[in-house]
Amino acid sequence: MPVLRSAFLALSRMRSLRRFCESSNTGIRLSSRFIAGMEPFDALRVAEAVNREGLAVTLDSLGESVTSENEAHKAAEVYHQLLDMIAIRKLNANISVKLTQMGLELSPELAENIVSGLVKHAQETGSFVRIDMEDSRLTQITLDIVRRLNARPDLRGVVGVVIQAYLYRSQADVEQLLADGIRVRLCKGAYNESAEVAFPNKGEVDANFIRLSCMLLDSPLYHGLATHDEAVILEIKSFSAQHGIVPSRFEFQMLYGIRRDLQRKLVSEGYNVRVYIPFGSEWYPYFMRRLAERPANVVFLAKNFFRR
Image 1 (cartoon, rainbow, N blue to C red):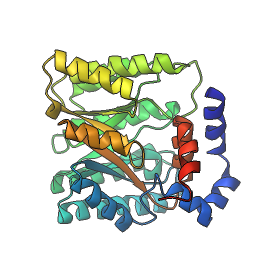
Image 2 (cartoon, helix red, strand yellow):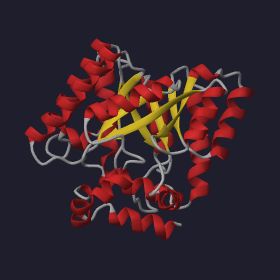
Image 3 (tube, rainbow, N blue to C red):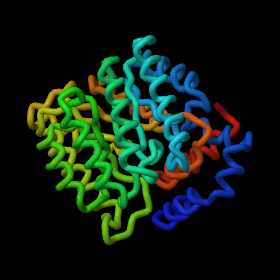
């Protein structure tokens, strides 16, 4: 499985294959299991349907490193539109944002300024902004920006961040974020990291995910635990029950199109569940990381290509 994971992550960086897939009807059809559609209204329609099933959502306009300030502002405008539509439609939804899509690699100041506008908009409309985590070379600068935004009295509590359990540094990062009163979305991690910075095998990643989940559950803040792993979910349920942590204190988070049965089961048991709903024409890197993260998805896609 590690070889297959590395192969998909390598494919995710192939520009020629990306261009072909994102313009191919077959590629778009394959991606539709995990991508809500190409346009914001596709995502909003899916969000309404998911809300009707009792699940919250977070909306992600797909796209990563931009090449100009104009592109960064255009990407942000999509999110401003989403925040307005979430409020108008009264959706149980928030947004997830990648800093490289907001111009981080052009100028950290540009990205921070653009995101601060989004967080302010979210505060005004009663929503929330989650800053996604990217590869480990951007971890520190991402955390620095989130901490500065949250330190502003007008934005405190309206911005959160993602922590990846496969990084060695994540326990220290969680401790700092809890001290700062910042909400965390904990996931396992989906980038190709070296053994110098990340746990090399699944067992170690799972153990760290559980350890960090318990730290988050022990805090008074409302956090999201992002996993489809039923064994890990059972550990979290057991810990919360033993420590008197009621289900309303946290939420499980899952990806659109993956383990819908488990999403519904958790809701029926009284747990909060949030579904991460991505959309947009720049779907290829996200799609390949989903295949790398869970190779069983390849078999699933093959079985369901001719069946909806």
